[in-house]
Image (cartoon, rainbow, N blue to C red; front, side, top):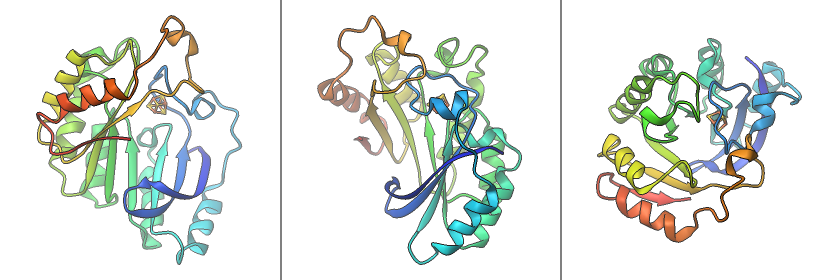
Length: 229
Ligand code: SF4
């Protein structure tokens, strides 16, 4: 399981906790706005798992939780083993996922190996292909959403809002899909570093705060809480 990065301290990645963030390299999606292209295309310096575990052991008095992010952590069988080792140290775990592997999510939930889950919803499930994945499987996205909504752990769904990807119609569809969700967060597309800059080439001006407020108003019709990050 390729570990491509470690953020030793974060105040924002695990709600309410000071956390360390482990970045797992590799992803099965190709989001045009992905900021972690080094984790997707390669070029990172890999960490040994033991280095990470030793680091977490030393930080027990300073860190309150561990975030496993990516890339896409659920691509790897060894994710369960990593979670077990982190749990053995006594840390709660937050998983960041794109939701394409509901079986893995279900397994981690059943075994109580994760304590918080954040799933990205890129667009309406039937629109993932071809922008996000050549052969997307919308039913898997829908299944992950159902699993997470009925899980007993805190969770959130998240969407990055960019022109050419999110419209008011699409936001309505997502809002219906996640109706009743405890938390939905929207964030502005940031064009500083993207996986596919050509995708955004002909967009003169991307969405601003006001557009996000409009999307928020749509989402608030169905979810319990919607925030802009
Ligand atoms: S944004 Fe996330 S899901 Fe999309 S390509 Fe990057 S790591 Fe994968």
